Amino acid sequence: MGTVTAIDREPGEAVHGFAFHVLGGAGRVRFAGIGREAAEAAVIAAVEWLRAVERKLSRFRPDSLVARLNRGDAVPADADLSALWREAADMERRTQGRLAATVLPLWQLWHDPLRREPPGPAELAAAAARCRPVHLLPEGPLVRLSRPGAAVDFGGLGKEWCVDRVADLLGQRGLRNFLVELAGDVAARGRSSERQPGWWVLLPGSRWAWPLADAALATSGHRMRGRELGGVRISHLIDARSGRPAPGAVLSATVLGATCLEAGIAASDAALAGEAGVALERLGDLPGLLQMEHGDCILHPTLAQGVRVVGPAVRPTEAGSARFAA
Image (cartoon, rainbow, N blue to C red; front, side, top):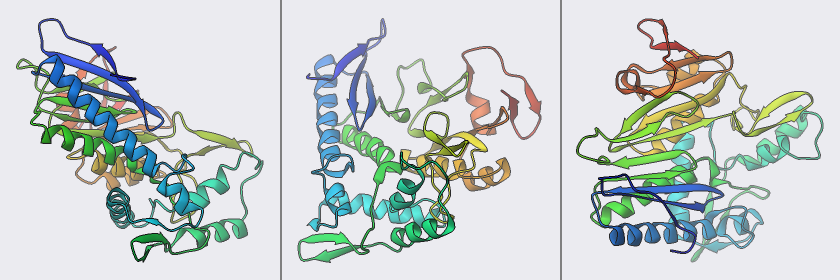
C-alpha cells in the first residue's frame, strides 16, 4: 500500500480507514460495508489519482503545468487543468470577484517574507493589474496565460475540487458508503453503519459533531495561516477585488453543501467578510458555523438541530438566530 496507512476498524462493523499524505497535507478515506481487499484497492486508486493531479497542478512543483504557466510558458491543454480553470471562473463570478485563482501576485505582495511594512497604493495597483482579466489563450494544442506577469494558484479551490472528484471516482467503482477527507474538508456518501444517520464529523474549532450523509463540509478562515506585518496579523486570504487581506472578523467559516467545492467557495467568501451579517448574507441558504474574532459562534438552525455535543454543553444566547456563546 506504499504510504497509505490503515488507521482503524470499528469493532463489529465492516468499516476500514486509511490515512495518507497528499496535496501538502493529511488525507483520510473510510469505507463501510465492503471487504478489506476492496477497500484497499479503492483507496490506492484514489491516492494515485490525487498524486497525479498534484504533479500536474500544484504551483509548488517546478515541473507542474501551473508552475510552467506562471513562468510564462505555454503548456498542453490538459483536461484537469481546463476543468479546474472553468471552476475558478465560476468561483470568481459567484463571489463577484472577491475570490480569484489569479490573485497570486497580490498574495505574494502581502506575504513577501522580506517585507516589513504593508504595501502602498502604487504597489497594490501594480499587482492588481497583473491579476485580471486573465484567460487561458489557446496556441494550437497548448495554452498560456493571457497577461504578462500573471500567475495562478488553485489552492483556494483545488483541494475541495479534489475531494469531490475522489468521491465521484469511488462512486464509479460502485461504492456507496464512504467518507473522503483532505486537510479537514470532507465529503460523505451513505453512512457508517445501519445504526447511524451518516458519518459523524467534528465541526472544526467546536465541540459539535454533525452526521454527514450525501453532502460535504468545508472550512476556511484565519486560525492557522497568516503572518505578522507592521504589527498587524495578515490573513492568507486576499480579497481579489479590494487587493487587501481579509479583516479577520470571521475567524473561521464551516459550510455544509451538496459538494465540497460549493461549500469551500462559500466558506472562503464568508471568511473575507468584515462582520457577521455580511458573512451570513454570503452564505445564503447554505447552513454554516461562523466563529467570530470576539468569541461568538453562529450556528445555522439546520446544523443546530442535528449536532451532537462531544464536549461541555454550549448555552444558547439568542433564540431564533441559533447564536451560541463560545
